[in-house]
Image (tube, rainbow, N blue to C red; front, side):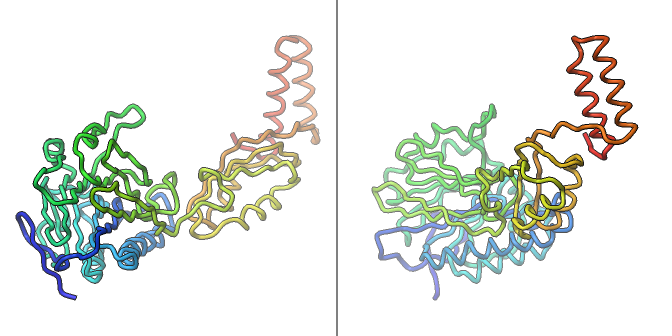
Length: 380
């Protein structure tokens, strides 16, 4: 299918002749981070780079299946301006093959002055906006205000509804909202005062809503895991706009990395009270893991094994079975009784010291327990 379209200014990408349905359907994604090294994943890094690539391709597959009219990529498509040619060609190929009109803005990882798309030939269906600009898409009855990273001083004046503008008016931005004591580069009141129909945000790796007033506003999150503590699996957003109704937003999972089954808020609580040895615990935990698993395991209960529970050894044994692993020690160790002659001597010294200074008896008992724990191979 051939596309033609009109814009207010600049190079013209391809947009369908005119949509005849009453709904404008948009695919919104951001923070893909193609070309990221993922050094923290060790030997699993290269396989995860391919997961990221598959998730990006899946964004466009979902966009076509759900009959989207436009794809918005809100910055950080690439992890840096210096990604290899392979990733640039891959992104261009996926976008071109989709035949879907696509708008890309720079993010903080792929800034406008060095963006891989800045000085190369782009497919006809791709519009790259390195500065604040308002694009009128007459065929879609819409206009998009592009607010890329690096041009923040011009964001607020551009975020406004034009009285004589298109029926549907949207913004595409890359930056942070205020959070955890950080003022953020985007102010929520800008969103409310804009009276736009939808604001597509990039920068945060988990989907999150920031609707203000009548303006629906979302971070799409990353389509695949960038860091383990983001919401998983990675997602994209399908946005439906019908003037003058409020935009409807549907998160759609597209990533492969996932938390293990039974993990509430990404953390799997595991009671160790029934285990008497480390091997049986290892066997049960390993059965929960897959190559795509992001496992944050919190060990609870009371450990009753004769040998100390070595968290580092557990981690080293389980890590090859999953993508990412963290083990939190929230369990209580069983009281250790001395078995060897040296442990008996240690216990006798602690008891004698406690008898001399009864006020410190608890401290000497804890020191004795720690000593036995370390003698049996435990680690701090």
